[in-house]
Image (tube, rainbow, N blue to C red; front, side, top):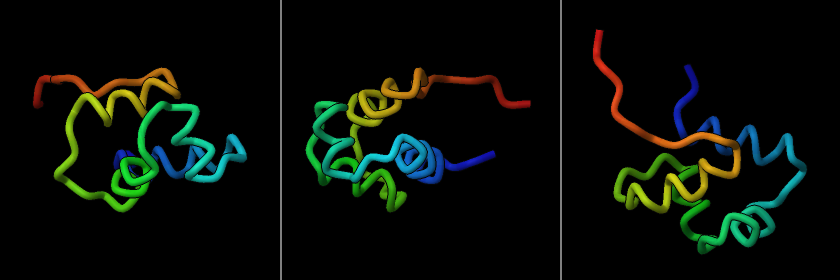
Length: 65
């Protein structure tokens, strides 16, 4: 399973977008995209979800097994 950082970076590159282009399309600051792709853990959930929605995903609770 990919981390969120790996998922976002891979999908952004598959779309042929730079970080700057992607941030503009997602409606977030360039620093948000950079921090997500670097795996920083001090981001707001709403910003992460705003980025993930570009790929039809969101972060939500799942039951541990």
